[in-house]
Length: 212
Ligand code: DC
Image 1 (cartoon, rainbow, N blue to C red):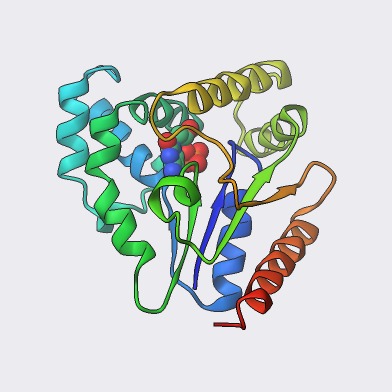
Image 2 (cartoon, rainbow, N blue to C red; image 1 turned 60 degrees about the vertical axis):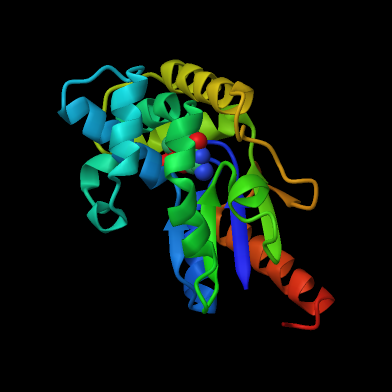
């Protein structure tokens, strides 16, 4: 079974995907980490984030095993990832790895922006997780404050809106729900309720296809 979970920054898709994967004992790929990894390489080598050639080189030599650095999760790296993710050649260089992950024999859960539209359009279940920009900003703000980062709620909201704009308006593989994705709005749901709602979407889809 292939499950794709796409949506904007701070919608809750990552946590939902991790929990759904744990529930069904499926391997999970957070595809945002790949773009984050490319961005970190560029920054570490002193390249500008709009240096297309350097970005393509970093994407081509990308190694999925090098993916767990705490640093990849930093907010600034998410912004940087959104900038390198606009280059078609960077996306192309990361495509095979993601498609191979989706087609592991045991199945997979992938989360990101284009996993239901580009990476695995043939997925058995597609969920598109949304939440209002205000609610997403509030969640992100709480996380950042807990980590000791100093930022105003207004600044977090502005950054989220900017990232939504860049991810949705790019020419290739923009953030958008696949036509056959089920929408899951988490604005008024806590993480437990969002997880339960995601599970019931998966179960309905499985029942529809004879639990294959
Ligand atoms: O989900 P995230 O915050 O880790 O993603 C970081 C950025 O990476 C996101 O703003 C855009 C890009 N991204 C993408 O273009 N396609 C994906 N499937 C996942 C992430």
